[in-house]
Amino acid sequence: MQIITIETPSLGDRSYLVHDGTVAAVIDPQRDIDRVLDLLEEHELELSAVFETHVHNDYVTGGYELARRTGASYHLNAADELDFEVSGVRDGDELAIGSFTIRVLHTPGHTPTHLSYVANDGERDVAVFSGGSLLYGSVGRTDLVTSSLTEELTRAQHRTAHRLATELADDVELRPTHGFGSFCSSGDTAGRETSTIGTERRDNQAYTIEDEDEFVRILVAGLDAYPTYYAHMAPRNRQGPADVDLSPAELVDTSELLRRIHTGEWVVDLRNRTAFAKEHLTGTINIELADNSSTYLGWLISWGTPVTLLADTAEEIADMQRQLVRIGIDRPAGQLPGGPDAVDGSADRGSYDTTDFAGLREAVDGRDARVILDTRRRLEWEDGHLPDAVHVPLHELEARLDEVPDGEIWVHCASGYRSSIAASLLTRAGRDVVLVDDDFDENAARHFDLVVPEG
Image (spheres, one colour):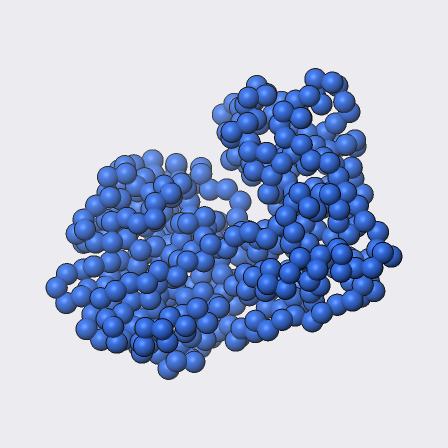
């Protein structure tokens, strides 16, 4: 039995293809299923079954289309309420997939109906696919279904972890879906690339915090904001998502691009933040193409707002388009490769300065008029922040622009990525900004005495 990991860095998730050289199963496939189909063809495999650990909250599943297209059976918890027919499974069920079997475990916590799947090669349990249950060093967050269930699900998550440790041997590989940068993780996932049940028993917080009440207190206190687009994912997955279309979006010309900017549509410039700061089309938003670009676009945009993509190359736009279909933004409203140079000279252009924490320190010492804006999330702010800084998390910025004081705004985050988005939103709103493009953990304390709020 072999396991192939399919990485999706844009969401911090993994999918898995398990096979015996002839027959395969897939666990938690992402929506762009061409990656799975290519692997099946490359290894000359027949897909027998698709398994979902849960109705996902952070992405639109590819399982529905993959099963339909290949004729594979499609498995979710029989208790899940869905708008389509599946081969429902329950705790204790075993399914033969070629020469190996998949055993079903009910592992509530991340969701009430969450399942894990244990792969057995005929001699021993080889791996457990734990979805959003037991992660590397942590567990899946328990507040995504509804806040009223958070405590109940957190207690269930603790019990689930202990069930897995009781029923599975120490050498069983742990293969979670979440926990590689995903906001579905409730805490630090330890930076591991691989793990086993035995490893987790030694240092996962689900085991090191043995008292259930204490576990609930610590885990719930560590839950911070998560992307607002999550609200649209589970309903979409219960309906049965439509097929993916990754063909290039419509090309737009200068006049149409400017019309979209002027009417308030989102025109997103995917170039790096330094290039954008140096020159950009007035009214565009900078979300630098990276592994997490779609997460922040989906988090910040009003759902359903048309989005047009601007980048240096068509390949970069295609990359972002693939990221976006995973979170249910099926088609960009248009695209324009070539960056601002592809737009004629009639378009207004803007720029702003960039600096680092040393430069900010100099500005503070020189008593320059400035507003320091911290766009990190709540828990980051509470770990320590610059004196006299104003705190507005990036995901709240557009709704709270009137809370940002007048004056030139020196905006920072933890690395420069989120603050670059914030700088473009502020500039779009007519504010003067300086982007602090620097590493907070490495450099802020070298130049400032950080403030740690009491309590």
